[in-house]
Length: 196
Image (tube, rainbow, N blue to C red; front, top):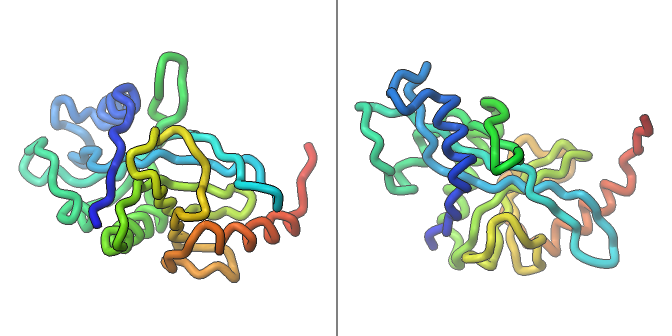
């Protein structure tokens, strides 16, 4: 079932384009933002209800501009071409470019998106970060047309932990949120809190 990507805020996309210098086609690697995913962070978890989350940014997967073309490619042909990512963060009046990102989470995100495309139901793809566990998942929100900045993981949602995942959590194994959350709650309860 096709994923339903939400359009990123215009200020987020423009900040990435400016950072890439795509307007003139002279960016260092001639990259362009292909797919945007809202990044949510778990800010609180308990056994009494769903975790509290908040949107912390947008991650744009970047692909090469082979011939200078700016045409948007179909999602299924875009996945293999992703080579890096650009992050944005909230700023006064919208969103601002934060940094470029490479490494294993880029290829893991691409792999998880390809996995998600094979699932039978439509989902809105998001990223869900669990900073205390150094963990990121592809969060497949079952309310496929929801506001991408709002909501929290629902029991019917799916998650795909990205590699590398914490010990004891299988990466790239799609599972329901209500299966993974008890494990995360237990793990977070055993993580020592650092006071500054």
